[in-house]
Length: 373
Image (tube, rainbow, N blue to C red; front, side, top):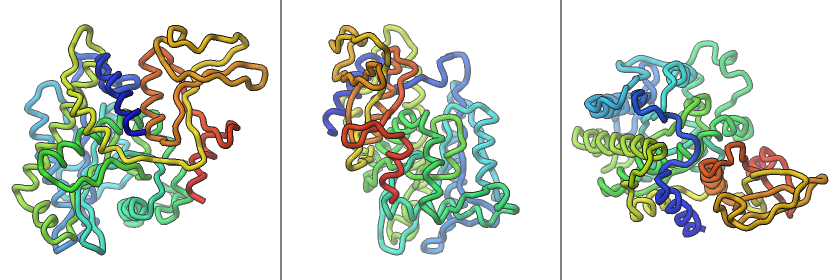
């Protein structure tokens, strides 16, 4: 399946569409707005592995990333916090939405009771693995430090996986772009700094779910790991990681611009595409088949690529007296999201993801819940 996704991405890049789906910033005169979020702060120190303070490291790295981007006149940088202050989770997303940001990047440091180590980057989505869920719970539990959290986060329990499912659907519209941004950042951290690759993953983060733009959460490394904790806390480590995160954001912005430019040869190489693809962790739903629905009507249309703007692997079902046409078929939810982005770039702006179990169409939310039981 990885080879299929790689081939699909190579098609996109050969067309000059480096980030599938509708690009948020297609006005080259408008600055590319990046909201940088330093996790934790004030009365919330974050994790204190090996005596280091997550809140201080995150703030320092955010400032370094911002300083790099601010030297480029194409960017406008907004910070959720610039001092050691406590900021409620819902306020962080509100800042990004208020400025109509193009991307939202939240910086954190990881911890674990073992000597786990490595860099990883998260996007919003449901991917129920015990270790990922533990990380999400730890970052979400800052809610309990907030005043009136019962009212602000009514019905949300960061300790319960069952309450997290609905939040994942909020960011679905930007999932493909978020995955690409996360992949670019993750690859830089891993390949250029020789860090262990823990991949691009999905999980449910309150700080991401209410943003209306591509959003990622970067875990710089594990402060609880004896050598990695020292590196992440060091001035050298902070400098190195800041540079690679900034490069990832710049590359993402450049690819967005390529999607709207005419007769511009893409800068990204086949090797870079393969590296991005390798970083995206699979999100498999056993027993579920996802497809992209393109159209429905009473007329029976040929499945040849010429009839579908060059798309291949088109299938047709007759349902409720209508012919319905689908693109692709996979149990990997990440892959189908990228495929959806590709179909929209090919002109099917209203295409959307549907799910099947045993050949029968089921509601998408039911399919996504199937792995939480």
